[in-house]
Image (cartoon, rainbow, N blue to C red; front, top):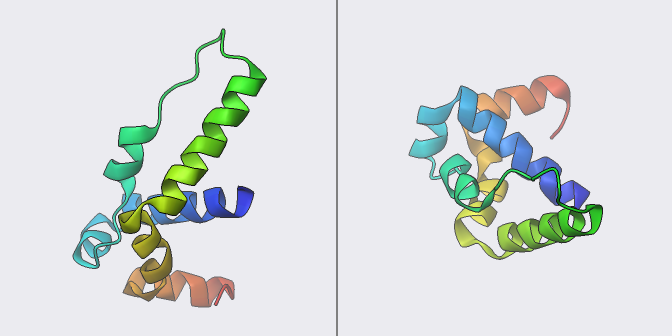
Length: 89
């Protein structure tokens, strides 16, 4: 789950900085993820939060648009440059 969430966060950050390029490559997932995400309430238990994160991860793994973005965002020029600079290829 942690690896999937990290990848999703990475793609969302790229979407914040390079929205136009990510949308042109059909790799913009911020709106899709925002449809699922909700703010935890103070009364939400740790068990509830853990289950929510598991269900969110499962949702992302099964969503074709998100999966496409996780794979193909690496080919978006600004992302490619960042990954090369950081040695993340």
